[in-house]
Length: 125
Image (cartoon, rainbow, N blue to C red):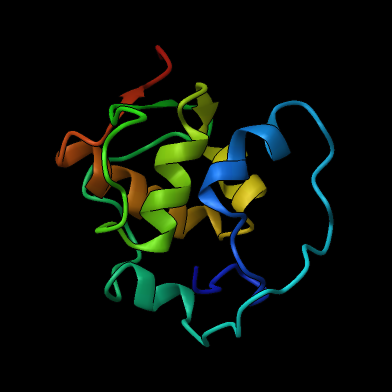
């Protein structure tokens, strides 16, 4: 999988996302198995800096994709979010665990919600 974390570290393999982040402390520097790409955060969002729908950082996100669904057509960020959110996570937690800036995660999650790939549960005001 191509790299693309905030520090150009590779994302965790999709198959290991639950095991790695299921309560255990993640490895601070995962072994780099592939050459990382130099994709900047704004490139992941197509240059957009604001999500189409406002997402609170404490909003809860759950995956709407099934385990059997083929995720290979998704970008690495969408694959990681979809897999990670099979357990309900907050937007801030997704950002921290994947080492992607909060603004980028908000834009990607909002896009995924619009496409029906994740469910977002906003906090009551």
